[in-house]
Image (cartoon, rainbow, N blue to C red; front, side):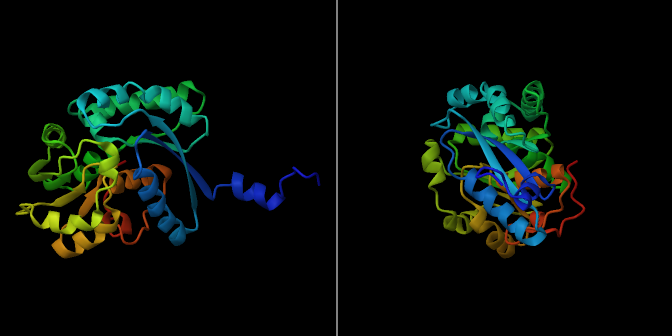
Length: 271
């Protein structure tokens, strides 16, 4: 055996079917999606034995403004081609508001652009987006009315609410934390979310969107809020995780992240 010849067991583990590669397209200032998703998939791996790795492409974004969001959208195809070089099994476009700011239904076009770019680069892969994942998951759950927390300035929060309502889901109440700097969004304290959620008008809601932003930390609070309020709690990140798992053909088995990912909502099917 030469010094550079891989051991047979290593080859099997790396190239076999017990591992999936997840491609992410994230804002350049992202600090949360690449921490919350790996943590959820770590829990999935502990439950199932299947391993996941993450491979990211970054698109420039510092401030969450309509101008910077539009510029980020224009980079989607280039980022998709770059991340597809890793021969990933799925690509997730992880900036919800960048897509939703383009108007209702924009996730469909964004996902098509990303899929075409990956296929054109010789590495076709299924595609989801946090924007599409959130609305599709809420629809599949049968949610007709929701309450929501966002980190955005009021103008962008209204765009997100209008987008969700354009998908046939009423947004009964929303709290906007009014943070424009994306790095500061990533520094928000998830421990504050239970008390924030308590302030929402939750009368008759079918689900609570605890974080309508993949950059706003929320995973640590999802189960606590769901247990306290007695309604399904989803976030942009948990909905994206759900769609990734379903696209890979894997049943969710993630504890501590809400019933959506626990396996207790097997009837939900976003396919």
